[in-house]
Amino acid sequence: MAHDETLVIGVDIGSIRRPGGFAWADASGDAHGTDDPSELAAYMGAALRNGRRVALAIESPLSVPIPSVSGDGWQDLGRARTGEGNRSWSAGAGSGSLATGLAQLTWLLSHVAATASRAVAATVLLERFHDGDADLLVTEAMVTGEGKPEPVDDLGNHRGQDLADAVAAARRLEEILRRPSAADEFTVECAPAESFNLAAAAALRAQLDIAVSELAAEVVIARVLPVGPPS
Picture (tube, rainbow, N blue to C red):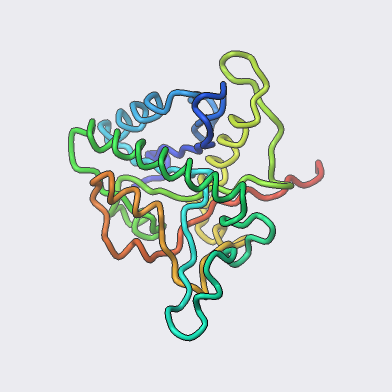
């Protein structure tokens, strides 16, 4: 299926009780919203009903490493994923984001599944999505440190970092869809531990059509790269 038939959305998870705490945007930045996840669910549902595919980049840890059950593997429980550095999923900010993101993602996917006019095939695998075997791709976004964009105006004319992060995540995922090798830049992965893919778990909980085997897949990470100096 042609790339221009795919709706690419970035989601900055966060408190729905803080104005702008939850924000989403498509890669153009023209379609966006804050605070009400049901608006995003409706937008996704309409796209799927109209025959478009949807790719999501969720700014929340969506995989955790499961070390070996043999020997002293237990000593690696809670360690950072390879490549995370000081942005570990198991640190205070990371674990808080993981819990919030998992709940919000599962709710979002459940809303889509409940309102879809047909079964929705989901995947966490880039190759399966590229092959046209799934309607919905769920990935993780990392928008941290030097990759942080400048805040942008939201519909209320407020300067919003959350909305800017959502746009940046969507654009990075769009780049990865065009050029899959881009996902290998600044890689974060569970290996050498095994992966517990929380995006796949959320899709299963939402009763979307996804293979159980994807629970052990590495999550695709749309890591926003540092902004270079003006050319």
